Image 1 (cartoon, rainbow, N blue to C red):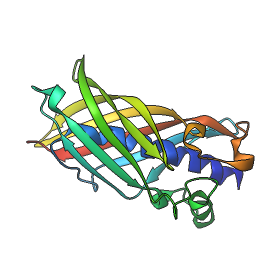
Image 2: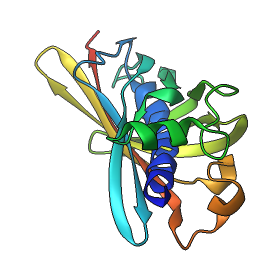
Image 3: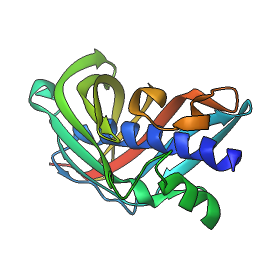
Image 4: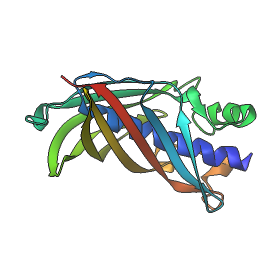
Length: 188
């Protein structure tokens, strides 16, 4: 059960990161080529797990980064811990509470160049009904006719009430979660 909780916390981080990453391309993200994950330490051991369902809309022109926008919606019930029992626990009230909060969302508010195909994307991350301002570092590259957005966003799972009750104790599941994303979109 404790293993599931850690993975659940990682999932929350992934949701946050995914939303932030998606905010940099003028196209529907190709979810078959894209991924969002969360990395969290459980009993000191890092684990990484992915969200299987998400949607992202990105508008991005490297010549006009200030005009960029993004919105990412992640299906919190799609967090995959690799075990049906753990997945079910992650959907429960103590973790994602997917019946009440079926999705996590990132919506960009501004984008600024940070040099060398890197950008700082400010936005609002909402997980489990809690919203916070975040700053996401994003790297943008072109592969064929597609734009690729990569990044990592560290968040506090407790800030979003992910891991309540006995799971607030960070000695088993660390508070820090890193949301990682790789988003691929058609280049416009």
